[in-house]
Image (cartoon, rainbow, N blue to C red; front, side):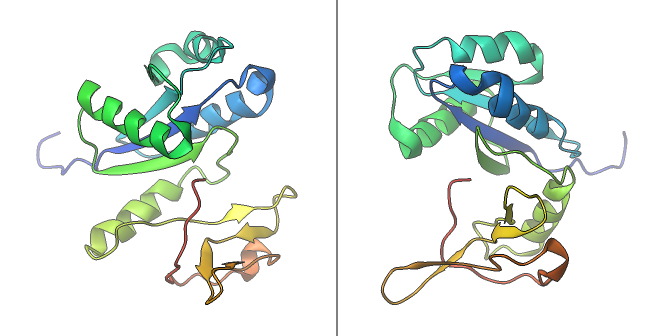
Length: 180
C-alpha cells in the first residue's frame, strides 16, 4: 500500500539435529508456534545441522512452503549451526533486520511478542540483543527472564519462580542470554 512503511523483516531461525524421535511431539509444536507469530513481515527458517535420521525431510514434507528449509552439509554444533544456518539464510534470501534464534524444543506461548521486541529494538540503537522470559512447564511461573552473571561466573536467573503477573513490566538489562 502506498504511504505505509513496511515492518522490519524478522526471521525465526530454528536449528534441527536428529529430532525424528520427538517430531510429532515437541518439534512440530515448536515450528507450529513459530508459524503462529502475529507479525506481518516474518519468515520461519528451519536449519538442519546434517541430520541422519530423515527428521529434516519429515519437517519439509509437513510444513512445505510455510518454512524456509535449509540443510547444512555437516554438523557444526549448536553455535556453528546457528552461525552457518544464518549465513545460508542470508545467501539464499536476504539479510533480515532482526533474527530470533529458537531451539526446536521451544514453544512460543505469546504470539504477539515479536511486535514488542521490534518496537523496543527500533527505539534503542544501543541494544544489540533482547530476550523475553521462559516459563516453567506449568506455564504459570517464570523459569528465567535471562540471567545475570555474578563475580564467580555463576548464572543467576531473573525472576525465577515468580508468576508472570508478578514479573515487573519495565525493561531491564541482563548480562547473559541463553540460546533459547
